[in-house]
Figure 1 (cartoon, one colour):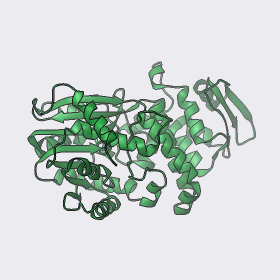
Figure 2 (spheres, helix red, strand yellow):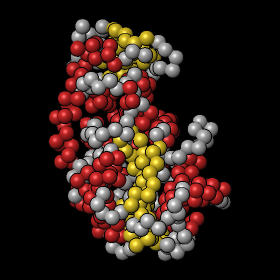
Figure 3 (cartoon, helix red, strand yellow):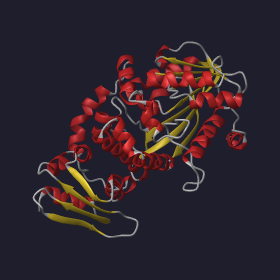
Figure 4 (cartoon, helix red, strand yellow):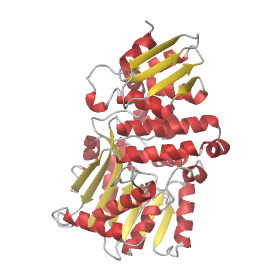
Amino acid sequence: MALIDRFFARAFKRGTLTVTYADGTIRSFGSAEPGFPDVAIRFSHARVPGQIVRNPGLGVAEAFMDGRLAIERGDIMDLLSLATANNRWEAYDGALEPGAVARAMGAVKGRIDRFNRARSARRNVKAHYDIGNALYDLFLDADRQYSCAYFLDPGNETLEQAQRDKKAHIAAKLALKPGMKVLDIGCGWGGMALYLHQHYGVEVLGVTLSDEQIATAKARAAAAGVADHVRFELVDYRAVTGRFDRIVSVGMFEHVGPPQYRTFFRKCRDLLTEDGVMLLHTIGRAGKPGVTDAFTAKYVFPGGYIPALSEIARGYEGLKYYMTDVEVLRLHYAYTLREWYDRAVASRDAIVALYDEKFFRMWTFYLAGSYVSFRYGSMVNYQLQFARDRFALPITRDYMAGEEARLRGAPR
């Protein structure tokens, strides 16, 4: 049996994968089972199997992007779901995983790439966020919330509703009062900053390193007539000055990089007033520290890294900075990514017209791969609340639920 056949036989037990090789040979793996996909693929080049065995994630991604791996039954979401549903993170048996050698070889490069000094941080952000607002309009909600939504009733609510509920969930943890000064680190297209001002009358400064995001955010504030109260600047968080009652950062910490965690938390602590509070929302690893997969590092988020909770803790410990609350969102991003994937697939013609077929395949692989990482893998979201003073917040979490309910019922 060829090495690729042994690889597939081990990887696919439940559900079925049918493979047509470049020489016309057809083999099937697994067995039909309700709830598991039935997928058929075809390799058009004899080198593809070897590339997949050496580095499964990158090998499958590049073969799919280039058209050397064609999916004849199902789609890329089905293929990746079939692979990861058979190998759920919590069921891992401790044996050497396929591609472990390749990941180990790339670990040193990954540590260098994610150092993220100010100059490289700007370049890395532009590589993902400045590829055109038109793309994001095709799969995000109208507010362009490019982070995990908060689903109260999965399957029975819209992405738009879930993103509004995400903003309410975060705002409730900030314990805001009118007139406070708020810093939004990684403000995106401005949705969170505008929301906080709308509901609390706070003064907000949003910062980002994306030219396209900053232009849109400023235009939105001007259109809403609040540009004097909600300001946006193209600046690295390390260069921000002043003091703020509250700091919020949603979906930005993934770009900081472990070597800079200490710098990040020290800077945030210094920017807060004595009774200041911060809410950090980030993707995280449920397990131990790891390495960014080669596909993501090469094609999607150069310099990006998903932290383990232990790595985050090492960033702030010793700074006289309380972690006052932590919440783990296990499946919310999976639901979010499924919505994004479905919208991207429905917008195939528009995305191909903007870029090309290869880009569309890359982007859908990214969304599908991200989905299965949260649905079956080790990815979660952490919401971490910090305070400089032990008396800055109520001593129970009841205030969060009450305020969140109020916001959900407030006029939009």
